[in-house]
Length: 408
Image (cartoon, rainbow, N blue to C red; front, side, top):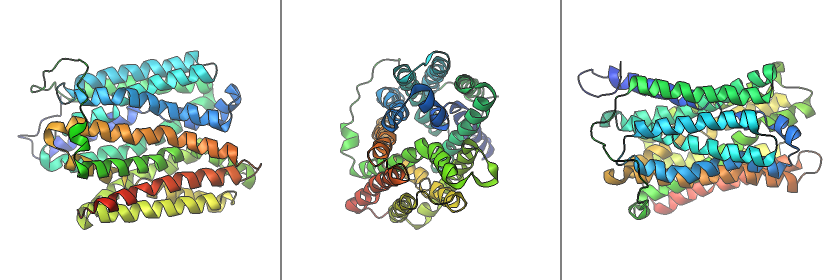
């Protein structure tokens, strides 16, 4: 029975809807981390340098950027439920295409660009679908939980990819990930009703972002979110490869865990971190708290970079802590942009929010890979440079928030 609708059911109906759409988000991301999880294998299979591996990781988000302004802007007039189905279908095709047809760098890049287009039709579109269907009093909490569940989706993808690849090879891991997109669409259709208020046709939108650019408060959150994603996705793209390196200099990882399993556990820290972060910022002021959070994360990133090559017994706890600091600002930044948006331009605001943010998601893995190649000294030099590059980019966030001199 569809769970959307705010009236007549007390708080149970919004809670159920939030939970089910968060579940759809998680399963739709089954192929999200597959390249990052299997990067050591893919580098060997495709003979990739660090820079080429960065391109393969980052161009996923180039596909996202190509599609998200169109798809998110459409949600102002077209029911996000319809667009979600398109995105899920594209994700399924892309995962099958990579698993069955990728045989080198260029074919891999093609299918990852297509996969990014699929993410554009499910992640933020799913958030719009959710916020359109919960009461206003629940909107901030819905954003918090949905955004935080991104970490669960990424973690499940790391774990699924590693387990399937170990059992049946890396191609099977991509194919298995694609099944999640189909399951997500079935779930969304099952728990939501078509919107009775948005009857627009699927057509290319005007893409007029001028009202959003004129909204200085919204733009401050959007630009800070970009700095956040630079750090977050650069970290996620290279975490498995870094754990493999750490294991090589330490003689193994704690509890004899595989790098993909450990990466999944590390990324799970993003869920409580993001939820706790938004609760703290709601209580003590969004901008002051975000400034402290983002500055602390950047400092820790620099510290990890300088300590690259440390024994795994010491490095792994630091990586768990870093997973907290790179995630605890995520939901609060998105909630800030949603709150600052003019209601009639919410779709365009969310489109620009994710478009600018995921530009950094595209560039960060590449920047890390370039640093890895440029400063490779046969030891920890490249890894140190990569983490410092991420941390310095993250500092832009607190700077832009401080510049706007906002107080809430």
